[in-house]
Image 1 (cartoon, helix red, strand yellow):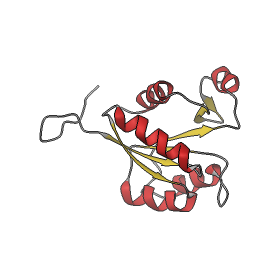
Image 2 (cartoon, one colour):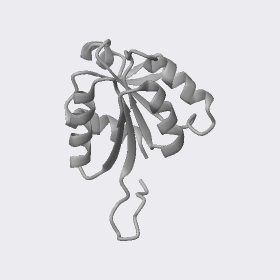
Image 3 (cartoon, rainbow, N blue to C red):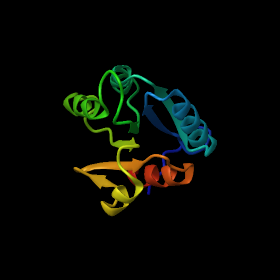
Image 4 (tube, rainbow, N blue to C red):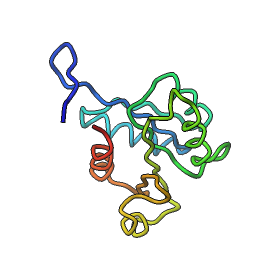
Length: 134
């Protein structure tokens, strides 16, 4: 694995975008992922804002809730795929609608998309992210 290095010699942090309508969930996921020193985490509680942020920020990975009020995570993912600026950004769905057992039985992939079930521990999330990123 080739790791990007910043000019100061430190590994470059991976930029993640978390789109989830639960503010507390966003806060704690951001806190726990940034504590690892490996990630910079941007968050939004709006699917529509997430689409704009993804296009502007070009994150390395998008963490995406499925059930959201204004636009579903599935719709967000489809719109991201249709945009040439965001179509190559990997998406990891984080959802409470799939049980841990369902996700594990499908090896974390349902319908060709990567999933992880809520509640998720920081260690599980970091391992899944690391497995998806170069």
